[in-house]
Image 1 (cartoon, one colour):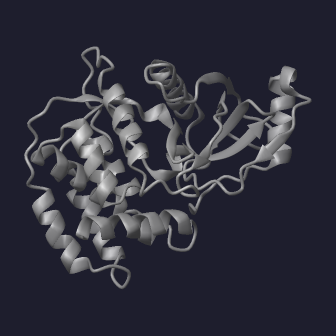
Image 2 (spheres, rainbow, N blue to C red; image 1 turned 135 degrees about the vertical axis):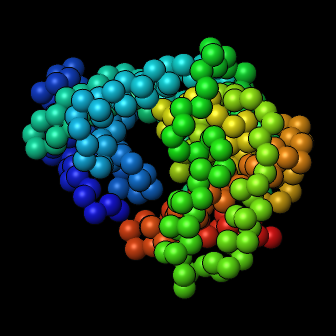
Image 3 (cartoon, rainbow, N blue to C red; image 1 turned 90 degrees about the vertical axis):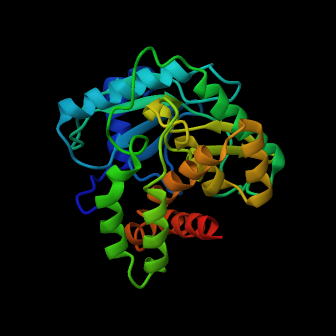
Length: 294
């Protein structure tokens, strides 16, 4: 998916686990080849653990700091809602040709929403609203938005959106999308930061029986625009359940429109970037944009 992507195989993982965590040496190692993950290669260790290996090269010390921050965020969220989230277990070291630190988390059962589409489920929409509301109740402890990525000032995404529009010619209705962003970027921000998951896309949501069974990739937990987690309304839900989610969260018109804006900002980066390397993510971007345009 990335030009400089690292190669990580089950044999490398088996060697790393055996050397660094001998208590798991005899456990089976299975690669999640169907994963739509874009940041980490995912491997199961036995039936209860998951190993995550960063795919993009970086400075090992910086990667370790990021993994430690992810572990802290995962621990902070664990048990704060009734919905399971991965919990940190261990950090691994480079070795056997793999150059970066890596992490181990608990495994969660369920089917990702890209496979078990919950878009028409009112019950799932109610669960999703409950999860977002629960995350918002976590104390920010004086923390504010870090300034990186989504969740701050919409206008800070102007350069990124221009980049995406240029690369989406021939794929999408770029003139219409430019006009939409021209309106989205002017939406004012009136609410203070609250705690946010920050990446509620289908690949990070587990479903069972049409209900929310768990939430993955929680390492980005942190303060942000309260509207940021509303991206899930367009990434995951059709019109009826989306309205249910809005009512359960009590969103006013401004916050709802800002949620649309953040969903737009995220979706614009998917169709062109993943067109040839991750069809699931590319289709997600196209579907979300279609929902926003309708």
